[in-house]
Every structure is written in C-alpha cells, then in structure tokens.
Length: 544
Image 1 (cartoon, helix red, strand yellow):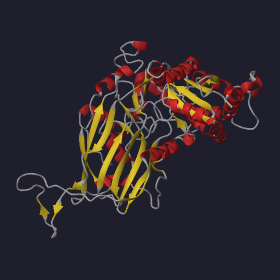
Image 2: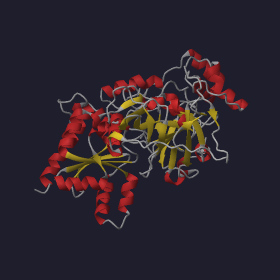
Image 3: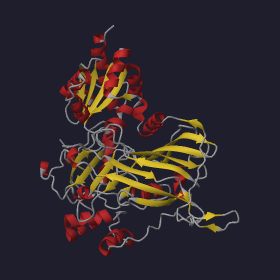
Image 4: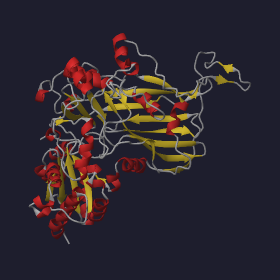
C-alpha cells in the first residue's frame, strides 16, 4: 500500500512514492474535500519544453542532479548554485560569508567553547540495516555508515552569536516564542526531498546552522515536514540573567552526488542556555537529541533519479548527539583598570582562573513544565495530556475512565516518523480535544516498547496490558479505546480510518463510522464517531 505524506507519513516497511511539488496544490485540495490522494493515481503530465529538452540531453539521472542544484527551478545553474560542485571538485570550502551577519569582530568580547559528543546510530536498531535485507544495498546506507564522529569536536563562538536566544521584550516566564517560525503545515505541503545542500541560513538561523554543523557539514535548519523551526521559553529570570529552554526541529543530508539523497531526521533537539540579558556572557549551554525512547531518528532515502522515485524509510536509535559548553564564556582579551592588555597566563604558565558570581533567580519554572509548553507550541494536539503507557491505565483505574490509546511504529510527538497526518488534523481539532480531555485518559506508545514490556517477565500486569494492545495492532498506526484493565473495546487502523474519510457519506455502509452533520471536516467527524462508539461500548463495562 502506497502511503502519501498527506495521508500517513512514510513508515518502516513501506515504500513511498513521492509526489512532485507541482502536485501539492492538488493534494491540499483533495485533503480539503476529505478525499485520499494517491500519487500513483495522478494523471501523467507532459514536461515543460525546457525540462523535456534537458531530459533528452542529460537523461533521467542527469536531470535529477541538475534539478537538485537548480534551487530556483529556472532551468539555469548560476555560479552560486554551482558552488557546492565546485567546492567538491576542487576540495576547497571558502569561509561562509553569512556567519557574522554584518557584526564586526570585537576583541574585547567573550568567547564560548562548545564541545560535541557523538555516538553513531546503532544500525541494529533499524529494521533494514543488514546488507541486502528488503533490497537495501550497502551503497544506500553509505552516508550513514561513514558518519561515525562529529564533524567538529570543538568550536569557539562569540557570545554575541547567541543573541537569537534572548527573549522578546516583555516575555513572561514559561510563555513560548518562536526563534525560527514554522512555515509549513499539512495544507501548505512539504519541501522537496531532491536536495543535497542546505540553503544559506539567514538571521537567527545562522547560530543554529553553525551549532548543528559541528555534527555534520550539511544541516538543514528547516525540515521538509511541519512543524519546522525552533521554539523557546524562559525557565528562570534573575536581575541580570535568563535561562532559556529551546526545542529545534532540524535534519541532515548525508549524501552527495552522484549518490541519491539520504535524510537523517532526529526526533528533536532540545536544551538550554543561561546567558546575560545583554548576551555579553554565557554561563552555560547544552543541546542534545533526547535518547530516553527506544527509537529517536527517522531516515528516508530515494532509490531513483527523480522526485517521484521510490523512497525507503526506517527508524533507528542514536545513543548520543550532544553539544555542551566546556565552561562559562571568558574574555578574548583581558584588560587592567587602565585598559592595558594583561597576559592571560600567570608567570607559572597556568591560565588565569575566573571567578563567577552565584546567580540568584527571582522566578523559575521546572524543566518538565517548560518541555510540555514547548511541545504544545510545536504540536497543538498535546493540549491533551498523553501519559506513559502503564501510568495511563493506573490513572484510568483511579478515575474510572476509559483509555484512548494510540499504538504506532514511530513517535507521535516528534519528527521520527509516524502520525504526521493524525496529529496535524483530527487530534488537534477543538471538538476532539474537548472530548478527550473530558472523557478519556490518553496515551501513545511505540510498538517496540510494548514488545519489550510483553517480554518482561518481572511485571505481570504490564506484560498483560502490552499483550492486549499488540493483539489488536496492525501496521502502521492503531487507535484503541480500552478499559482500565487493558481490554480493548473498540479500535480502528489508521489506513482504514483514512479510507473511510475519503468516501462519500452515502457510500459508508457501517453506521459506526458514518459522518455527522455537526462537523464539516469528515476526518474530525469520523474520529468523533470512533470515540463516541468507544464510550458507548466501554462505559457500561466500567466498575461502578
């Protein structure tokens, strides 16, 4: 079954046929009418004359490479567009002209040393990591296999580079703001997979691009899929300092021509920075990919020389991808009271030791609460609390409620695959949010984690709960309504759900999933019917 990005996201085990950007308008229109859109069903179109001529001259693979460099799609390669190939052929990489953003060097400013810690992705966590398994060749994964260390183990930054992390004037504690706004949604479509080199970052993107370049030379600050960007919130305020927590969605391109694109998309980058209110001093900085779940990276790679080529997808686990300040920022040049430069080393040769004052915070917010608020900013469906699997059933038992559970291959609340359409449509609609908050305890789980629970002999109750779930699961996503004891009273597969919402109301025979005139959006109406049917079946079975 082919799986469109505007339907369900590409998931392990499925080959996706990707639409060209020219079809995105049709896809959005189909979505607006509630119809499924299958690229395979699109009518073939003749190419524009220039592309037809280029195809004859270059062949399919040549045109694919040409298009990946032709970023403005004008069918001409400008010197700026050709630069990545020139650098590749000559082996030289000119210093980027965008890094300083017009700020001249200041010898009196402080600098911060950032260190990278990187452990490569564990290939055994991928379902297709073995050579030849499901047709995956060693060449397809070469960029991934060769990425074993951070590109830059250490780098020095001027403190002014971190000004984009400062909050806007008047920003309240815990109130999120966008450092880099997301420009995509399920209705605007997504960015092309056929790219190798990131566009030059601008403005506030520059510092994030420089930081992520410590891991790999080709970071894309803006992801192909929504939600893009970087969001932040204040977690502590003192007279002179802020603590800012942030969440960044970015990805990396691991291949270069003549190989086909290979996208590496961590679930998220999160972290914090403690900096002075004028950004002249940075006390602490840390950025990392969370590693507390069994899978935390999505990988997608093309198998052909066009935008419509088959795409393979897998999920895996990276143990460590982290940047951390070696210590507080220190002056580049040390001056005495008269403004004279002082040697930064003592006569003994030891470096001068700096003493930093203790920060007294007037307002503070917990890391957990800040993370929740950033998550809601990125994913409005998280206005409903989704508890950990076992905790959800304990809460349901205590409150005598049904459990709304989503079981899927990849994470629901980060960029590592599954659930894109689900979370961006029905789960964030107001009627669904209201009913879930009022009548259900919600949870979502990775299949891998429930399989581990099922194999755990130490906790019998958790083993039983996991087994009841896995019995009802079908790839890629299963939505379930359960009793507090784990019994599934109602469930629906995401693909079946999308099939139903693509039908005309008069064609739906099963009234359990018939449309309601209350909602214009058939997806919302159908999911509402699913939840209400779960309540009808489950409420009489709850213990009084």
